[in-house]
Image: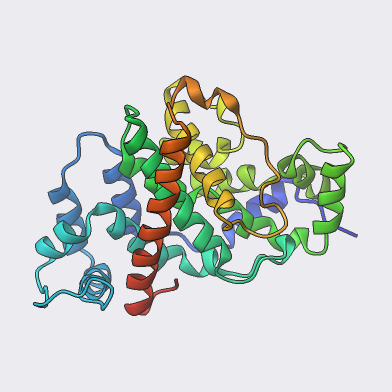
Length: 292
């Protein structure tokens, strides 16, 4: 018998998840602001000894192959860029959550983190290569966090993957999101949004988590970002990096074209960049002792 997740149960699940660090929370707040500068990120990193050590370890890892060792936070952050720094901070605070086995989706440990990382790169590249008027850095961060709700409800979905797939095949459910809701009473976007609120994430990131499968339902001001994450998520799955049984079992909202202009050539370039950038970033985090 599958246990349902009612509002009280969801509250308990969220309460059981450790809060992100104050510095990581502040970093996400800073990088969500359109008028922030790189020095804001540098100064934040300097206030956290653990984050400083991890940033320096990554920049000096074999993946970057620097001739001379970098010992300055200013130089390290400037060289890595804020997207890598955000990746380090999120992995540092939520790595255990994002790296856990998703039994309910029949996905091994680490698959969620790999999917999120590729979706983040894809969302960023969609913004850059389409010339969309939004922050590619914010799209990257939103991509990293978009599926975090899966880690919260996965255990409740244990053993349900065949049933969920059958629901979609028989048209009993529109997509995997609807199947999750029927099976346990809540889908991963709702669970992720509840965690985003508990973590006091910027509203832009919370909206991307909540509506990345239903971008048209987001408030108009957030839709460009949500559509970028929607496309990044799909591109990651198209590249063979999903999160198990739900991969490619969601609807693509064709209205993305109202916000982001993308064609076959851009899509091919994005997928190529995702492969290249994922390998480098994944290697750098692995070399520094982080999860890949």
